[in-house]
Length: 248
Image (tube, rainbow, N blue to C red; front, side, top):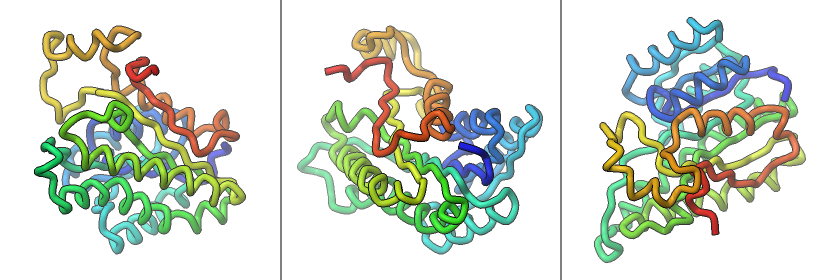
């Protein structure tokens, strides 16, 4: 896809989002590095991108708040160009609890990140994509939905809703030249997981055909593909990035 606008990566001050932002910038995208509270982290990501010859800027916003998302999209467009690619990566806490103890609020907490936030982002960026005549909306999903991990019912239900949202948007937005896909990682250790030793991960790795844990770069490369012209005829898909862990 010819680059005529910018790429917005939410929750990009660290972890997967930071690596995705760096990877998109390496492909030539002007990147909006979104953060909610970690401004120093976001500015480090911007500095990395600029040092590598790319273009980026940091933008603070709570992407679950409608007014802030509207302001965010306008600010990005003013500084970097209309948003052509959205990577909905931001997430919140994911506590585990037995089904009988999961409150409705716990379900809402997950839906806010995986349904409300993407919906707000789409509404705020869609006019610009339509004007450009092209766009990419990329959800960051999870293979937890397929694995149906016990104790994660609220998270898994929201991830299922996210997939339904993406598939429906793909049908609606295709005539406007906009694709919508989900990139679904497996367990990818990042800063929030702390130190993960070989002993900690041995049980998980035994069930991964490729024999290792995933790295943020593994996910970022797939996101970059989906954002590129190489994926121009793919929409409504879910690309699982987990080394084959959930092969049927």
